[in-house]
Image 1 (cartoon, rainbow, N blue to C red):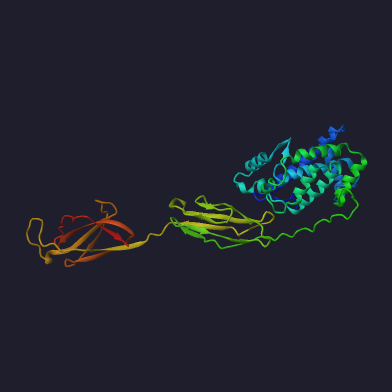
Image 2 (image 1 turned 30 degrees about the vertical axis):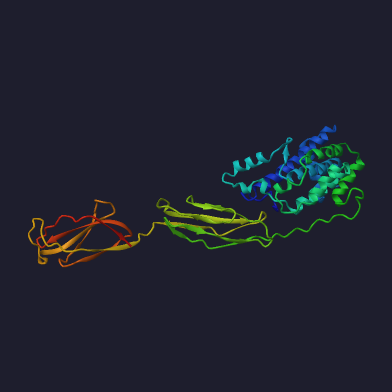
Length: 407
């Protein structure tokens, strides 16, 4: 799944793959060491790894590598790897005899602080290479233990398809799989040189146990993975109080399940790692520039990203509206004396958003006016009163309050 894990940078997308593979390798080494030690031969973990490294110089763990190869260690490691791989298939890898998946996931979560649950070990899909290696290792087990219990494991593994999730495999494999293979591991550690040779030959040739020199199973050609494609042009701005939505388009020619991730997500937005949808409604307090946002998609093998983009949250523009009033001019003053139109110089309109409070006003400087429009005010509801002023500048008391809506 990762071509060169030694130099590949660890990310949220690959950390579960790297940690799971690393721990599986570590368990193969530890169990090989302990099994050989239990048979009466003292050896260290470094000794096991030195012997495996020497043997692997020709590309095969078959007991016939460079100087330092030990056929017994290679044989035991091959049988042990069957147990480790079967556990890993169903995500029940044991460390020290206990299933360590929860501890591994906790370690990932501790070091990758914002990683989602979809990036943990339970979502590391099974590859063709892993299945092939497991099947070959189980053939090595059958050299030592040809029991029906082992055959059942072999048959169950043969039903597993590549790209399957561990949770589905757990429904297929027997719950006592690891215990069933313990006897074979012990047998490989105490086996004579002839059995050791057969184990290693089976691994090299990929043939069955009855005729290890039969036609070998060829190494499968590497499956060229189609890199997923992602596209879309996100909007660069949004007004406070308005919804922002960006939905990228992604596809994979192989039909692999895709998972999305995001870097530098704005706090006011939410992100769906299944669809890649970024959405949210910023408030006035969120006004500002949010840059370096990057949305990526992976098929579990390759990851591609959109170019990093920015979103500027702008202050919402005030929508202007207007409202219209009509009235009848007064004909008397407060003391009851007549008031002619010639005495009226104009009208004053007071308005505000709260009852009894009118901080805004406009003058209608026409004593004969019967109506007026208040324009360029923010859309909304207002409380309005009016007064009349005469040619000498004297102003009447306020009218009764009414409600108007600027649209």
